[in-house]
Each structure stands twice: as C-alpha cells, then as structure tokens.
Image (tube, rainbow over all chains, first blue to last red; front, side, top):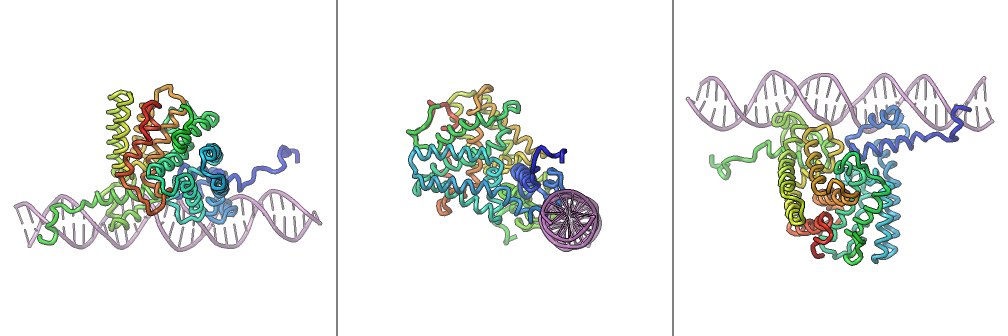
Length: 199
Length: 199
DNA sequence: GCAGAATCTGACCGATCGGTCAAGGTACGT
DNA sequence: ACGTACCTTGACCGATCGGTCAGATTCTGC
C-alpha cells in the first residue's frame, strides 16, 4: 500500500464526526444543528452519522462526555485538597487549562445547560458545575460570592468561543496570551481579597 | 360591560406573545423554539402568532429590539461622557440596571449572537456590544483588558438567567441583593485598579 | 479467492417545521 | 340591520427533522 503508507491508521470516522458535531453544537446549538448539517460538514451521509452513533443525543454524549469526566476529576481533586488560597490558586490554573483544552464542550453545556436538561450527559455537567460552585463558595457564602463564581465561570467559558465578537477581528486571541490573562482575572474574582495577583 | 370593567384595555395579544416568545427564546433558544410552542404557551393558535407577527424573525425583532434601543442609547451617552473613572462608575450602574431590566433579551442575543448572525436585529445587537467594548477598552488595550470586559458582560448576562444552576435552589436571587453585588463585581473588573470598591 | 465483518449510502417513514390562505367570529359605528 | 375593521382559527403547503432499513461497497483474515 504505497499511497497511504504515511499513516498506519487514518483519521477515525467517529472522531471526525465527533469533532464536527462539537463545533456545530457549540456555535449553532444542539437543537438547531441537524444531523444532515453534521454529515455534510464531515463529508458523510446522514445515514453514516447514525451508523456510528445511535442517535443525535448519543453523539452529543460522545462529544462532551470526556470533557465532563475531566471536570469531575478536577472537582474531586479540589474537594480533596482543601480550600486554602494556595489550593485555590492551583485549582484556578488547572481550571483554566481545562477550559482551554475543552472550550467547545464547555461552551456547549454551559450555554445550553438550561435547554437540554432532559439529556443525561447534560445533567452530569450541571451537577459537576454545581459541585464546583459549592466547593468554591462556603455553604453560607453571601450572594456576592455566588455571583462572583457565576460571572467567572460563565464569562470565561463565553470568552473562549464567542468572545471574538467583542474585539477587533484582526486582534485574534492566542492561547499563550489568553492563559495568563484568564488566570489573572479568575484569581481576582475567586481568591480572597488579600491574595490578589498584581495588576 | 360589568364583567371586564376593571381594565379599560385588556392585555394586548401582541405584548403577551412577545413576552412568551422572549422567555422561550432566551431559555430554549431561538432555533429550538417553534411557533407552535409559543402559541401553546400563550394560549393561541400558531396562525394567530403569525397574524400578529409576519414571521418568526419579526417576532424576535419585536421582542429584543427595544432592549437594543436602550443599549444603543446607553452606549451613546457613555461615548459622549468620556472615559474617566467617574463616568465609568455611572456607566456600570446604568449598565447593571439595563441588564436587570432586560435580562431575557440580553441573555438571548449574548448567548445566541453567534448562531443568529443572519438576522438583522442580532447584527444590531452585536454591533452595539462591540461599540461598548471598544469604548471601555482603549484602542491599544492589552488582551487582558478585552478579556476582562468579555468576562464581565457575558458573565453578568449569564448569571441573570441561568445562574440558578450554580446556587442552591432555595437561595433564589433577589434583585435587591443582586444589583449592588453585580455593580461591585463589574466595578472590580472594569474600573482601573485604584478605583476599586471595598470588598 | 472468498467469507464475513465493517462501513457507507439512498430510499423511505411519520412528525414537525415556518408559513399561506380563506372562512368565520366579535365588537362597534351608523 | 349592516358594513367593517380587528382578531382567531383549521386546513393545507413544501421542506426538513430524527431515525429505520435493506442493499451496495470496502476491508480483512484465511
């Protein structure tokens, strides 16, 4: 086989479909994305999509499930590690890396977590987010602490996918720049006042 | 007319439909909301909806257009008033009041501004948001300033509608509590470092 | 070369989509 | 009583939705 000898295993169709579906789900929305669109974008037929995934919901599950696994692991480590300022600092850094590495999935279930409550994988995501909120905020935290967390999470998630609206087109965001900036902003929002980073 | 004498003008059907549509558009999503759902929720037939509004897009336009008018007015005043810390403080307060008064509309076009680019009223909204971002951030502002603005706007908008996910169900947000908290958080994010409010 | 698994696809299904249209109500001025 | 302006509705349209299925094609181990 000389023609395709450059790779022992070509790109797996299921992975390709997952990626295309995730891009559409996160930008266009799950309900607004049709299996036909996914198939067209990926260069398959709608039937092929349904061969690799039992249903549209199963495709969503497959696309964002791994990200939620990571999120749950992150939550578990943080809960186990205590709530000190140092632990929060470590957590924020890992959290930003999680956001950067799973931006499409995060944007999908943060932005559409309300409208897709009937889908099990979305319920898992919402539960994990609630767990993180409860861990960051003390049980008796005032309203402003909850708002702080919500603004931080939703704001960060939004910026990573849709933020292009807010800045000039020619000043695209680069992860190398975004990572420390996000860490700084989230630290301001989530760290105790005396633990703020320089600005 | 003794039976309905308590009001000279009953609730206008168009207003009722606007409100129902806005609630569905903001939570379920524009594309995922059918005219049939809107009609059912409001107690009308689908034909009646299309009698009052020429199309689904026209209904969206009618539902969120006024909020965008307010936003544009807010932007105009801020641009005219300069960029001093005092002017920003006033702007943030008005902006939070705008968010609280138009939470459903804001959530709709902030969350779905990407997927509804073909709809004129959404383009207006995106343009207004961009204008505010450009006004808040200096032309040569570093990336972090843009991120700060994006996190603030998207985070605040999200908290007002979907934030219920992040807090215990029994600790519902009350505008009286939320308003100063939001003003405080946004001030931290958008004001120069020396202008921060106490925490 | 061949059997069999894996993959891909078009035809098709019932349901629902946004939207059109003509017919019928209902209230009010005359 | 009549016209008329406003409102509501069911029937209907073509298109598309998610999903099923049987058959064609390709790949793989023997």
